[in-house]
View 1 (tube, each protein chain N blue to C red):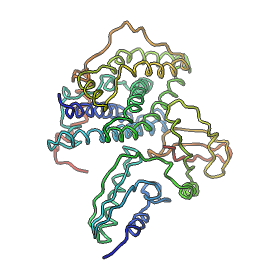
View 2: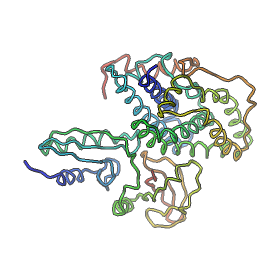
View 3: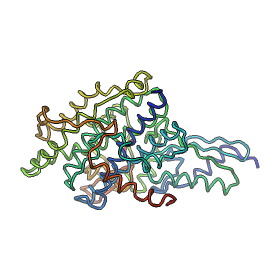
View 4: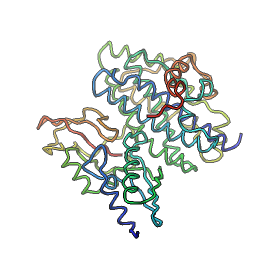
Length: 254
Length: 163
């Protein structure tokens, strides 16, 4: 694989993670538990859409096949999406689960952008320097809620514990890498995710200890394969909704 | 037509921020550079937040303004260096305060940590300047603002976040 193709794939990964998580958060628009939270979740979704746009646009420019950022977001099938399976998991309208999902992902995203800010690739470093400030707010906001719920009532503690237990099996996959990462690491463009895993765990534990939460037994099943396009059944349903309009009405503009 | 680069900056400085009309898009810091060649002008702009919906509007306003002034316009979106509220001058911050938005404080790089303890002390109320305030939500009516409440004048107010 060429350096250029590796970079395209890498940008798609970041963009797919952002846009799928943004879609999940946008499902809360108008359904937040309180007005301020409704606004917060929509704002986080908006930040992620912005990040996705930046990386899709860069991937589109690099591949130079006449596809736009919209084509990459709305005209690719589930098997071509290279997001981590964590971000596509449903929350069944359970607020704690939505917050936990964002928290687990944002902690990684924060660490990743912190390294990518110094990438040899100008566009990647520029986009990352921008995105990191947004992601910090996401980590902080979700972290605050996890502490409130975990260290709250008996019911809130139980429910956020359940959310953590349900989502933990998707966390190992956040650090999966393949030849794309190896090439970009060699080029000084990418990050070695294995080096971030311990930092991620420390960040997550810092909040969990305040929230009286315990990390589930690590011996259990762990999901795998998002970066190879292997997904849970949920991604197809997300895309069916997310991509319906541009596919049904290809010339629609607004 | 001979127009100086300075004159183009002034034209752009007359365009208000669509979300916070008390300040201009130049004062906001999203206009990074102006390159003038005869009647064609290239404007470099940078987004505040990656997903800010007002960005497209600002871009359109820049184009509309300069086309009306007889230019051929191209807007270039640049990402580096990343926009920061440190670019807001003290005069601009005062305009924000007068408009009812508590302005951002100075941002240092150490703050780029999600759990960094702030040493800035309490945020002053945008209306009565009391320090008896608390954060309602990190996220407000636009991407760049947080919601606060003042316990002395009992008013909710917005804070232009440090970024």
